[in-house]
Length: 81
Image 1 (cartoon, rainbow, N blue to C red):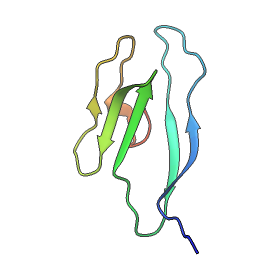
Image 2 (cartoon, helix red, strand yellow):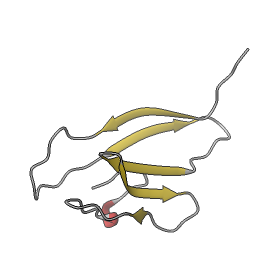
Image 3 (cartoon, helix red, strand yellow):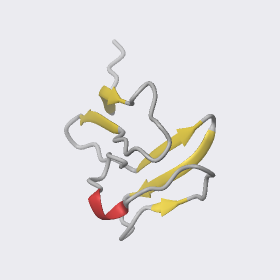
Image 4 (tube, rainbow, N blue to C red):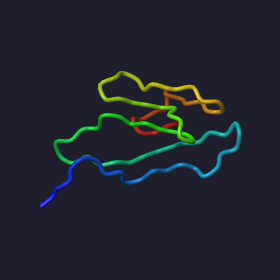
């Protein structure tokens, strides 16, 4: 019998379109099995990473991407504003 453990991605909220200069919120919800932990959360735009949080670090790492600004002051672990 194969038993899979780990993380379950329960929901991802990403607006279909956002007007230039308008704020948008990206959100993911996940569940971890007992004894498991989250190692990293990463967000991409058009295949290019712009946000990474790794467990044990004090703040997320941001990668510059034209037309995108991330407000880390508003961030829970998995959300991007």
